[in-house]
Length: 346
Image (cartoon, rainbow, N blue to C red; front, side, top):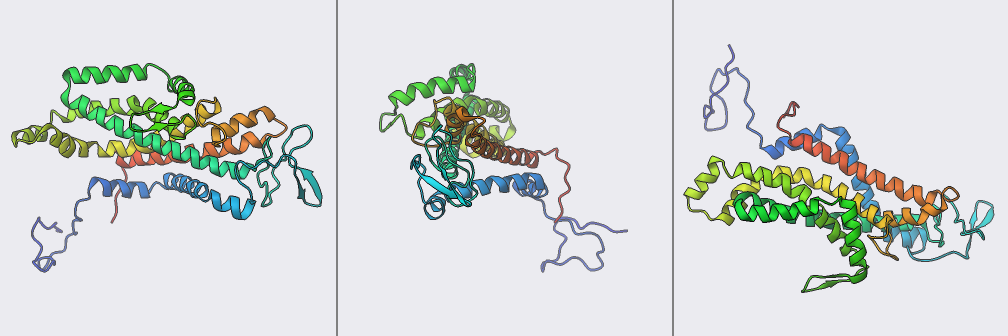
């Protein structure tokens, strides 16, 4: 009969007792190692994550494409120029105001917009702006939400009451409606934070708006988790050892929120990118002349169906980006789910 070795039964040199025929028990895996192994087996999530990474790399290489391939800039107008397509010359923008469609060549690869600007170049530069705003907004959301969730759930009482009511006020308004209201006001007056001031046309304005709007959507679940953690025995043991409130929150409670935070980050990134595009489409996000996928869709919608590429191209890029982040986020959530029944092999 095969038996398993007891803990500590290995020989000092790392071997097993003589005559042992049983299986070797693998050392235990930590939660992050186990989650990574689960995620590696989710090929769909990894494929869409690779798609998102590819889009990010393309957007980061926007200056290279603009200078070395398209030989233009995102704001350069070519409205009076002509370009040779095949064996004939075509106007970049016709006399009727209709921009040229995709040429599938170096210049105007995806066509031009109503001002004769290269759509492919603006698509990449607009992606840089959209991804930047989404990343900064996600960072703002997570930092504020973690602080509010920790303090509110740990201290409870009046502090919890004040912070919870403040979150309820923000949560009472639809995210898009509140974002439009704040975007219109700050686009005119800018944002004065005391030590420094942000101009109304800065990319940080929509980033701050999106980041603040989504704070309750993350802070409330974290608060609920903290309320449960503060009653655990290890928190009582920490208090008995004389640890202060800040030490307990940062050293004991926060590490137990790490998996939840990791799961929420990609989901909030997708929502932030989508909300920024919606605000820019409505004129309350990125301000001209800065491009973004939302502003490109808003500018090109007037030319449907004559120049549908001006709306279709940024729309497809936005859809692929949000889809890639969402599917990756679902994969990360499943990987951290302790109820996931996926066999882990060494």
